[in-house]
Image 1 (cartoon, rainbow, N blue to C red):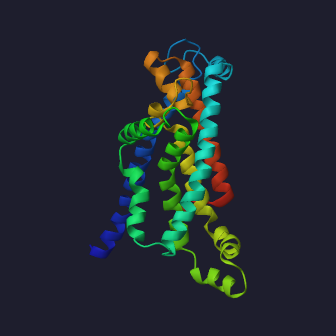
Image 2: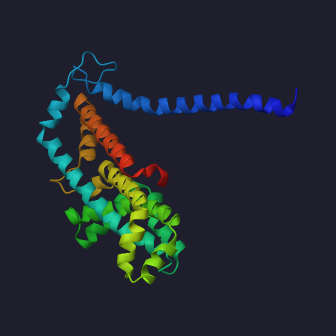
Image 3: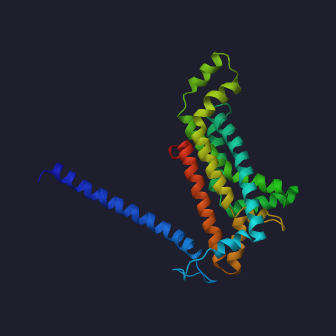
Length: 270
């Protein structure tokens, strides 16, 4: 048999095996999500799979629980505020690194990526010690700054990816035609990097919204975020209300991803 023909015959078989393997991995990763969603609809007061009967009681209980509602609002404002701060700082940093406006651009890139390398628990303990010395421990501003630190890398990386695909001469041409630096950036460069900026902001929002290792060290006694509330509830005993909260977070994340993809097509920049 011709070796070329044998190779071409093996190619479809390898593609099918690769597709089957990828599908098996995807199913394996999604099984825990499916288990959590199914447990949220169980009629029993304990987690059962498959659920014994279907009910929305646990969702109603969560949405009427003042502790969960307070924790949810805290998580939302914290994630929104930290994402806004990270998008501003991350875009400015990415632009300065890309245009070589600062020396040691490579070292600065590594510095901004450092929070992704350092374990979150180590970062949380380090921030706790630093905040104890500076008086920021338990403050809302300290918690916000910590979340900005852990979310900026996503914006920097996504923005650098978008800036790499932008022709710098377009902004230079705008300046030649009379626009100042900020105007040329706002009208020319910013619209071109918007998909990457949105992608980075989206990952920053999700990272802040789901964070436990850093938040648990820095929250005041009277404060809690939704992930920390779930974490403490699991320690006290698991019931379907925890699964209901997790299901709501899964749905919220999916909706945000779909809207962002429809708006900007951000998958091209991550």
